[in-house]
Each structure stands twice: as structure tokens, then as C-alpha cells.
Length: 172
Image (spheres, rainbow, N blue to C red):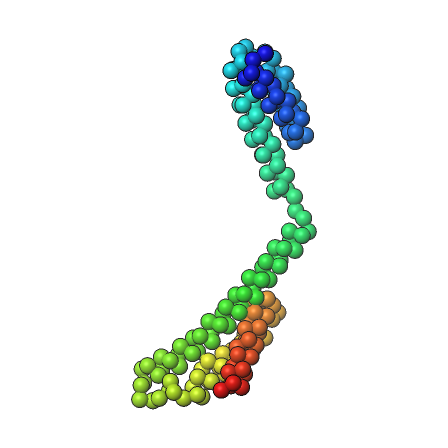
């Protein structure tokens, strides 16, 4: 027996031994057919083609098994991921609203430079803190029943902004 045929035999024997159970019988049949192929190099090519076919068959079976398998942990992770996205989107919306309030105050100062709005404390406090905080509380109350993660994200960002303002006023 030549070296290519020996390699072909070892390859198909290993596949018959280590293939998944649903592919093992097919691998054994291909190993038995190897004896009827004339020539060492055609036998090696047969073994390589057989190995590719068995690998595709095993991969297809594995893929169908994975797609049919549902674990409770996957469903829990899916719901955790949805909640996380909700909290982050609520926080992002709240932060966007606070920046919009600050931007409106800056825009008013830009349009009316003689008003001195950009140097006053109360327009900044009102436009970037008070009005957005009121909107945060109202939107959290409205969203709490239908979208609690989003409402929680809004409340958390509102609390963070409130703490930021309190620290700012305490240090200045």
C-alpha cells in the first residue's frame, strides 16, 4: 500500500471514529468504498472529497441542532439585553434633552448679544436644569407602565444631572 493510500485510509478511519453520530455511518461506508478505488492518488482524492462531504454534513446537522435549541438562559439574556438597550436609550434621550436646553440658552445669547443671557446664571439654570428635570419626571411617569427600562434610564440620567448641578453649586 502506497503512502497516499495509507494517508487516505487513516483520514477516513479518523473521520469514522470522530464524526458526529449521524455522520459516522456515512464515514464508515466511504472508508469501505476506498478499497474499490484503483490507484493511490485517486484514493487520496476520494478520501479528501469524502472528508469534505462529511464535514459539510456534520456542520449542517450542527447548525440545525443549534437553531432548534432554545435555552432559558438565552431568553433571559435576550430580555436583559432589551432592558439594557431601553435604559441606555432613556439615558441618551435625557442627556440629549439637557444638551438641547443648554444649546437653546446659548443660541438665545448668540442671537441677542446685548441681552447678556450667556453671562446670567438663571437662564442656564432654567434652560439646562429645571425644564429638562421637569420633562424627565413627567416622561418617566408616562413611560413607566409601557416602557419601564426607558423610564428608568431617564430617571437615572436626571438624577446624575441633578447630582452634577448640586456638586457644581456646592463648589462654586
